Length: 101
Image (cartoon, rainbow, N blue to C red; front, top):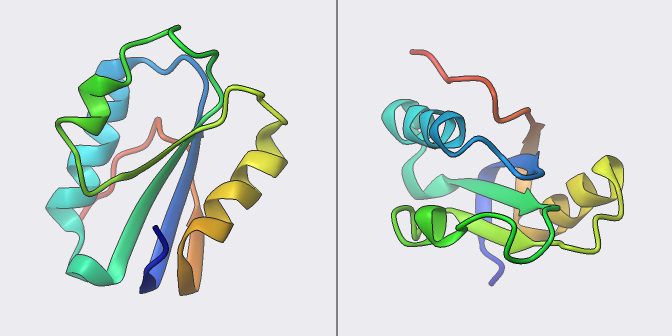
């Protein structure tokens, strides 16, 4: 599902700490002043079944979640996220941060 947006935010995970990942996503929602013109993309390099991904996909249906269990590496996974949304700008960011106002 490709969409045209102003900003794509790409993060890569591997067996993430669920509480930390939710803080990251919640801060995106809280401080996203672009609305639907911003796209949050999570590329997950974890082996299938290694964590409950439905905790993210169900709670945050607007977040693009790309399972990538072949784990081709950090750079290749960022490229997979980059290709998901067409945008003017792309932010590659670790998911252990929180956005602030």
